[in-house]
Image (cartoon, rainbow, N blue to C red; front, side, top):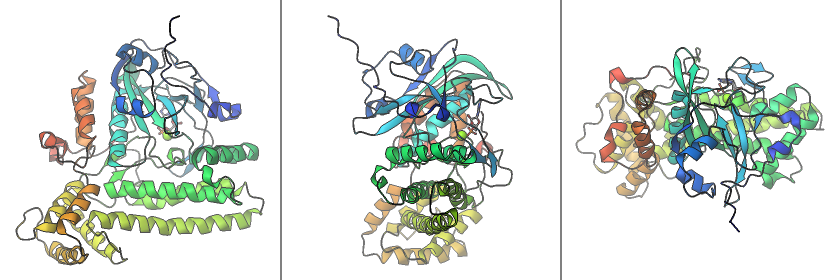
Length: 492
Ligand code: AMP
Ligand code: MG
């Protein structure tokens, strides 16, 4: 008898077993000419994909939704959210669908989602499609963050559809396959809370705890423990963004994952020159989601989650709100502490981080800002000065720099550690390669002409962000003045 072909994934779709109010069943749109740009073999392996190396044509058909894998149950998830501070009672997957969930060999559950796969009941005025540019951008930036060591959704595949998408100009259409530990957002809680649908709000909370934080399941105040867990995950995430000079760009509550993953890459960017108030997004006119505001916005988003969870308590809302507020206060303190520790480490302060170390960090950042220096490269250059303070030309010896330098040398040398160790530790947290905006633009420009060689090259370089890769030094350099990207666009 002929042996049945192993399915690529064994789906186990728990979200699709929740009541129908949580999603809509959808069918991916037909597209004229699916073609694979990229298949992330390494990630497929980690997910436990069975097929060894399926032909590109088959991958293109599956990951543009033309061919449904056995066990896949495509659904579009509903959620609400605060967008730039304003509540929208229904958003949802307007151009995405969840193919299904897979459990990897280590027992971790992942959503596999197609983004750009056509209209859904939540598309509102949109066409449900994605142009090529944002697909390439999300692929590169999400994978870059992963290899930099951050928590993020990932990219399993990218394919073109052979279709044209109409935006300000006419662009090739594409679909990204995204992998997330779930797509539950603060906005998913807000959706049920706004409708006063306490039964489903409770169901969602229980589901989220079981899926993401099973260790708190039996806590007496599980909703409070849940709030703390989501809070910690968000604090860890956003402080890591800030340490890397990453700006998400659209920190709306519908883009805030309760698993603490970076999600919904729109007009995001890594900073080149350091500016406390840097904004890239063309739609962020008032700088709500600027580099330094990300701290405060994290807490703002968490308070929206807290308001939803307060509805679930039977202690009377006043007491519940007080408890959640207390929790929020400690999350604020935790944010400062985690950011201080990460920034101190970037400066080579590895032991007994003290509050006054933040003065040193601020002094350094002010120097970078006034001198308009590149954030990423400056930390690498500074690491070279731990061992050798004799003669250097990386930095202008302004009085601000001299003041900083003397204090910094004294502080790092006082740790009873070898200079070499300090330098190595700094280089372990200060990358050489980030997904620089101007390089992404060059990749997209070539991609629009059908040439994906730069895209493939850049994906490879970003796999080893902390290693000097001499042959790829062009990806390391800051943009020349004419290459600087002033604004990034959602591009949806
Ligand atoms: P985003 O800004 O990407 O987080 O998306 C905000 C909301 O707009 C989500 O509900 C998306 O699903 C929806 N959306 C964005 N682009 C499109 C599109 N091209 N077609 C339909 N819905 C979209
Ligand atoms: Mg979104």
